[in-house]
Length: 142
Ligand code: RB5
Image (cartoon, rainbow, N blue to C red; front, top):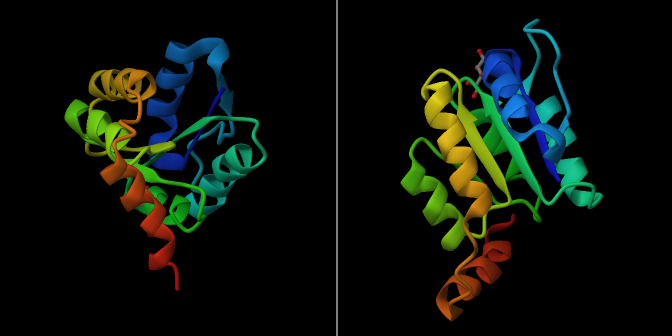
């Protein structure tokens, strides 16, 4: 399953992705475009992954930056902000990203759908160098 959430800026893009992924997605809100705080919604998706209710997450805010900063506070999350299909390929292959962050004010919805599809179908390249680098991410915690 895939968990998705946004802030107010990303509600329209979220709805399009939910409609596209249909029964593969857990929608963690919000349901209206009333102003909300992106860390509250990043946490909802992070918790779905931590609790093993979802394998992947999608987080949308205006730029995707706030959501990626918030999600990456959790040590088991590797959130990648993607604005192009190549970002999605490489963050899956190289970073084994488990959360895709999108910017509703920086990316068109049609492009976001393409990025989502590629992100979800691309496998991690388990080459030793990528695994070694991911293992070293914990050394960046402070
Ligand atoms: C909300 O206006 C905006 O700050 C938020 O969506 C996001 O872009 C933050 O990183």
